[in-house]
Length: 492
Ligand SMILES: [Zn+2]
Image 1 (cartoon, rainbow, N blue to C red):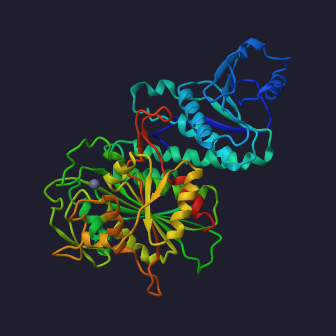
Image 2: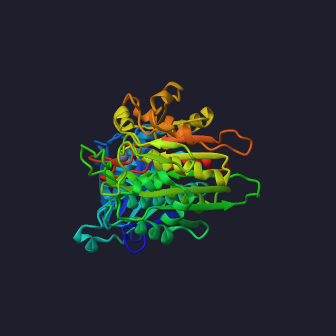
């Protein structure tokens, strides 16, 4: 993030082992590590390591020893079995490693596991870079400790270098997304957010900002209604990236909830609002997805819609029982002003019709029930396309992103029937909160030119966007579903 955040160390990928200017070498060893140890001693031109330093090291997960060769420190980490190593454990080892080294100014060389598998590379690279990330630049002593060190990822295998490059880029984008999430709402106002995006997007992404005035002309009244209590102007940001597409190719359209702060409105939150700056996380994730496709030069046509609003109270704020005519023409009774994310997404869903998308994917931090149901361990997925949901869940497993499918049964639609309008924005029963969001949004799925519903996937990441007191991450924003959705929509 230009002008505001500089704490990214230099990541370098090398194919030849170096020792000069390296302060710390890191090696992973499995249970049968003797042969690896011989190879390592050759790298440092020593006949062998003193046997006694490995007395308590068995290559098991959790084993760790350090050894000094002159000024250079060698760190050996055990990870258990060699082949079929447990991906989750490997990822966690690297997250922890990154986290524990994030204050050092040393040059570090990480000897990657000698494996061809793309995901084994991902566990190591993504684990380290996301564990290493820390949001501390608002502390006054930050300037004195801006890191200028380099981190080298070393592999002797040339053919895995593209994977290392890919996951370095994706993880750095993920960290940029976390910066937006972690910035407090007074420092990331809607206009600041837009200007950061403009500064940080690659040239092959176009950005269009639809102003409040234009939104009024377009009749995006649900989006506008949510923002009525705020002293900031709302906006809809449209990001577009395409490569190698024919005129007839339809885009994939993402919608990311961008509620910059959610007080709940007049249905004010009775629990702490401290985490409500994270209610724009999904918009930042959609920004990250579009930037990732553009950076990796994916083939295809991708559109990101980022509705940016703030849900506050004030003389102009919406009231419970207000009825709003949505962009789609359907009337919505506001039965809960804190159920605002689905309102802004609904208007964007109907607006997306103009792009004639082949697939619509919406992401939001939507229902508190999602967080409670899984104790912040999983996102939920719904939609009108069973096969896509399954595919996304499977890809998620490779990226340590847990996603669970919920049903879209007709009965839930009855729960949001309104006496005065076409639909209410919260359920009468006050139950099944996560499903009710999906049921509500199902009213706003646009139809294609043949009059059929556009394929639609709905993701609720509530509870997954922020982490506290973890041994794997520093406190703050944690990006979910970005890598999964990039992989899923690549060449789709
Ligand atoms: Zn809310």
